Image 1 (cartoon, rainbow, N blue to C red):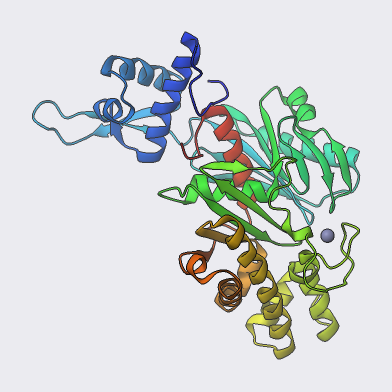
Image 2 (image 1 turned 30 degrees about the vertical axis):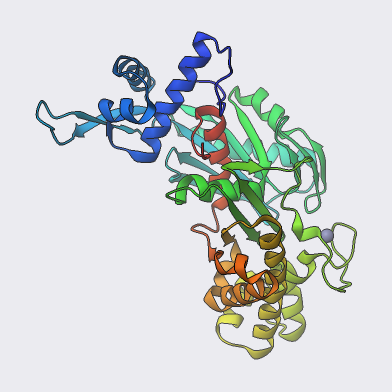
Length: 391
Ligand SMILES: [Zn+2]
């Protein structure tokens, strides 16, 4: 099956029509398994004969399987079909600042095996490390590999699989996609890590899928993935959601991007660890910071909750600009729990128009550690099989 499209071209070839219809059937099953052939015909508007043919191909392809029988409405009880979660495996990579993670993931976003390695500076070393990760993950997985999805920090041209620029990793023009495609001979997609996080939530954890969704990732950096009208919105230059590098208030702290006072310098885990260490020297990393916060250490609570308020103001701006009603927060900040979330909510609601803020849900997402690995896999699944986004 080839790259998906959201609409069938007006003068579609026979092959395009078949691929399009096949994706309709697969998508219906992915979202609403189990279904009978008759259900599928009703839901897709295709004839029973077409559905029969398409289902046959999908079964031969290993993507779906027959499983059990449904309730009879008079005649013979119908055979039910569902997507085979292990019909394809995917490799998802998260090239994070603190560690590189890789996982073998199935079509339902279940992580079957994962590996973590410390990152290693320059571009050449990075490529070698990525090869090592993929080699190790492929070594004992014999299943049919759909491809490789990669989430990385920075501005990423997804059409060419190139990291254009990454503040945190000092990469520029890193052609990850083509290099991996050449070595492994499978499709490779590369996306910004926060964009990937949004796809992970949308594809694997939200039912029904909202048409609009913002997922804000707060870890060492701060960034958002934005889904608008069911599609990932990347902006004109792939930088949508990079609001971690927007100056806020009159803060003057130098940012790693070369400017001063970015939101990231006030609200990221990295900046919180630094600020907390100045008050309490035993705080050295995210884990000790979260513990001190949960233990109620006074100075630390103030630092963390002040940052939550600052982030909340920025969330209020997003609500005012986009009027998106589902906003999720993911990443290590989730460790701070409901007190932190409550502060973000209060601040966001008081900084946005009441009518808009009232209907906006601000919550923690479902996954935090593996959200980028899953999101990179979701992007691959969307591109190769047409599963995930809203149509
Ligand atoms: Zn910055």
